[in-house]
Image (cartoon, rainbow, N blue to C red; front, side):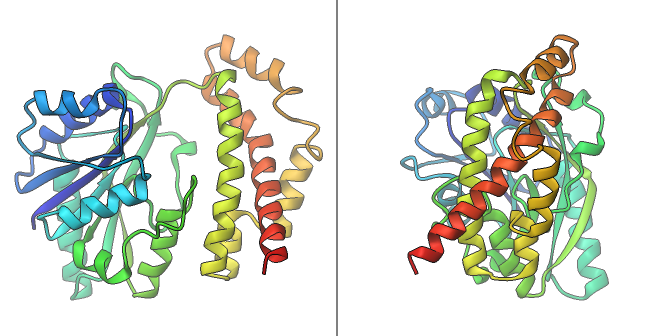
Length: 305
């Protein structure tokens, strides 16, 4: 089993270095790292060309987005098995070995390779020592297929048709591919020993405008997802149900609890050294904006039919 680890990146040079150093320090030996630079402007390409990463092969494209970058990575990959991670993920030395063992065990049990492995992702704001972060309940994911930490035979990705480039904004392109893989009969195998530590800066109030914008983008792309797969499961994923409308409407008191009214609470939590809790408070209004965004996008799509 030869792995091609596909990593799209855009303007993430500091954390990308940690990502690649960790990927180079694997106990498993049969692999390459396919880095696809998505038009970075922070010197990532020149830096990569000047560094010594023995397993890395670098490809460049204009700023077309992560889906296009992953597609290019899969097309250029030499491996029979693709591992997707993000460029802000720092893994442990047993990462690839754990995926390999789980894939082989799954193939033996099923008698075929109609499966993929999904590793654990732990969120952290600790840049200096990201792998010291403990697992938290908020790190749990119920996603069927997500590109943060997954390993799959390359031929299944090609058969499914790779990532849909119709997702022009933030969100859902990986889960939409997951629906197509599920329709092909692939089984999800959890691989908790393949741990990746997903770094992002500690939450601050300055991040809120961009977070709100992402929720509206996610709402619009959620409608694209639903138009391709008009099922109840997809409606639940994109939060386009009466359940989500009632839930987040009630929790946000119809939007009365928002980035302005909750600012004192979030600011106090940040001052107490609890930025993760402050971010969870922000999810109250962020989810409400997402629900509003998906319904607004759906109504607009209906008008243009």
